[in-house]
Amino acid sequence: MNNYITGSAIKRLREAKGMTQTQLAGQIGVSCKTISKWETAKGLPDISLIEPLSYVLGVSVMELMSGNTVINKNISSNILRSKFYVCPVCGNVIHTTGETVISCCGITLPPLEAEEIDEEHTVIIESVEDEKFITVKHEMTKKHYISFMAYVTSDRVQFIKLYPEGNAETRISFRGRGYLYIYCNKHGLIKMKV
Image (cartoon, rainbow, N blue to C red; front, side, top):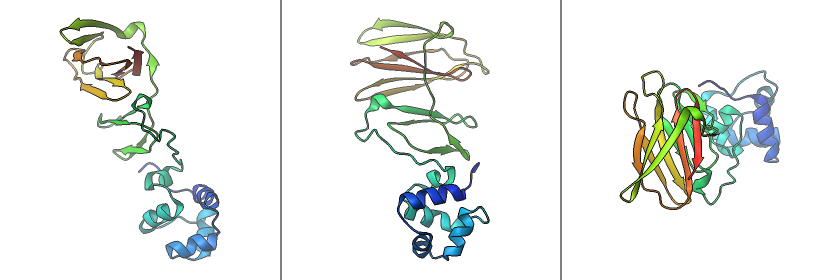
């Protein structure tokens, strides 16, 4: 992992729960002096205590490790609020419908922030039968390529994986209004309202 639990995160989460050091210590089976040492950066929790500590503090292990508490305000899971994450090591693509903490290859991934379509990523949309044929004017080499396209509406996500040295094109069924997302391995996530 690229992070480990900090004393300030433990203290902030403990205080947010309205717990004393003694109460927290009692729930995970350590002394209150141990909690004090963690919170003053004079020691770290043993790996065996991470899961019980995260449970008592009411956060995931990843949230505890990163120090960032996630409050998902997308309770109804509105797909239009989708988030995409791409691992820079293995290229894994992860889609969520709200805030979360994602880790891949030992790295905590930030959600990608989509930019508006630009001249370097011109999109052509043509009608073909009952679908749309989408072409992105973009090179597709091993060093610079479009990795995926996704069409997101209020009730569905259509995800198309693309590969280097292929064509930056696909067919998608457009049902309703939504957003077309395009991920360029050099320029990041781009979106377009359709």
